[in-house]
Amino acid sequence: MKYLHLVWAGLFRKKLRTLLTLLSVVVAFLLFGMLQSVNEAFRAGADQARADRLVTNSRYSIIEMLPIGYLPRIESVPGVRTVAFASWFGGSYQDRPAQFAVFPVDPARYLAAVPEIVLPSDQAETWQRTRDGAIVGKSLAERYGWQIGDRVTVVADIWPKSDGSNDWNFEIVGVYTSPDSQQSEGALLFQHEYFDEARQFARGTVGWFLVQVEDPDRADEVAKAVDALFANSTNETKTQTEKAFAQGFARQFGDIGLIVTSILGAVFFTILVLTGNTMAQAVRERIPELAILKTLGFSDRAVLGLVLAEALLLIVLGGLLGLALAAAAISAVQAVLAGIGVQGVSLSVVLMGMAIMVVLGLCVGLPPAIRAMRLRVVDALGGHQ
Amino acid sequence: MSTLIEIRGLTKVYQRGKQKVEALHSVNLDIERGDFVALMGPSGSGKTTLLNLIGGLDSPTSGSIKIDGQALEKMGSGALAKWRAAHVGFVFQFYNLLPVLTAQRNVELPLLLTRLSAARRRQNAAVALQLVGLADRANHKPRELSGGQEQRVAIARAIVSDPSLLVCDEPTGDLDRETADEILGLLQTLNREHGKTIVMVTHDPKAAEYARRIVRLDKGTLVESEAA
Image (cartoon, rainbow over all chains, first blue to last red; front, side, top):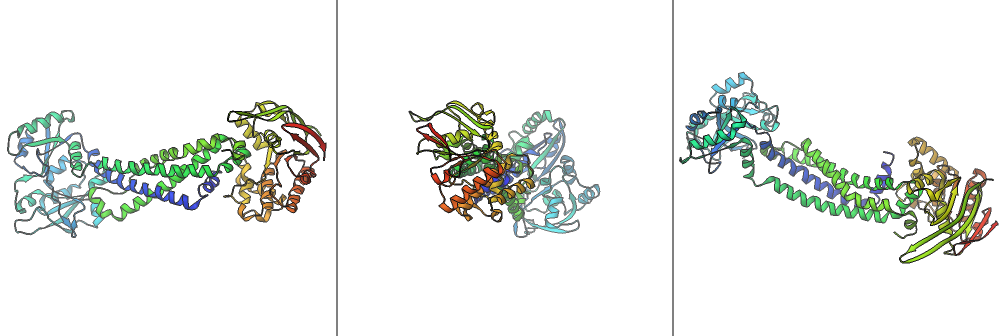
């Protein structure tokens, strides 16, 4: 710590140059923080997927519906414990596409097949007997200030009602929690029965089945058996692990991971070149000063450490500022990003960012630091280096 | 007085491209503790090379250089750096202060290599600045000081860790006569009243008059040693 003022003074020797470089690092890590948070949100579905659950949907497209009559046949497959189902509703809330998931489900079946969501039993009972009842995740309820007893209207964009109206009005009868994943608390679930009776078309169909198996090791076998049931029918199925389903779902938007990695790779490469050049130039200009430090008794290692510390300080300072700005930016557009599950800059993104900062700092700082370390005092003082 | 610096058969050869340049040739010299020696000679005579070797900034090609019983030629660069920090203060023609630090921080630099607390470092630096008459300029950066004041700060930096030896390379080469006399007077005080051994390279015969002894070099060889 006693060298901090020396490192700081060296870093800000040319204030404008350092500030501009710092700004570029801030922007790089701002991008990193935001893009990596989005990437993480897309991956989260797959990461949180359970090994004992399969998803059966149409073989040809996720938007093709399946007959609800498939349910007892899937249930009859050996190794299947329970079956639930859900459909994609979409819709708009407050004149904007809903920034949360809306699924019509069978309450009892869904709660049994998805034990990671926790709903008090009295609320589950109320939901079961309330035709237009809906339950919402705790974080979603907090975001919109919803409370039990409130009525919420979601405007359908693909599911008009049989009376021609697009307004689906629900009474919130429960607030569920998901202790392992705040992201899973971002959905509104309502009665499939109400949905099926009130919708204008496609009655008797569902979007996908959630199949809980007895033994996760036999999941593949069960999946094949389910698909075999409906082979060569008009509605062939594709059964896969929940993880594969989540990955496929995320891929509808493109390979987010690849896109994010490509953008960040280009950004960090630019930063590497830019900051590397700045540091090299800064050390070149200060050769006599570094020689003086050596003259006074600073060892080769101490001089290497000082230059390296400058590079690390520049990158870490800019990086942390960038991540803080990313957190602030995500918070500012929370309503938009929450729809894809982005809750903020997570600890894992911060840790990954810090690891990148250290690697970048070392890459940028080591070449000039080694040059400074190898400096011969007599040559440097005599202007020969 | 006892011998502080003992130089025997000191030779320094530089490799400049394919050419070998002998900067010093078999120099023998003793400097007593508390002495003030002016090294004089024409350009290229080897004065600065000898000074750098005495200051532990360079290693000889052959020969030996013992300072207070320690053979510098046997030390590696790390050991030499530690030795310099503990035993030598440096004063240069162009002051060589760090422009981004205040006078106080510049003077504190050698103390960063000690175990002294921050408060003690500050205190010692303040005393050194007071000794050179610049207590009121402690918070000024080098660009806010005159040449003479910068050199005083450099002298404060050289003495702050209380070294026994001061190595000065043309300390007044960039100063006017009046300021040069002030600086030389200060060095003389450090020598006479504080017992610092001083080895000073100079071209200036008037500056050499402040020393107790003048050592002349020519073409890398010691040609004369006389009382000033």
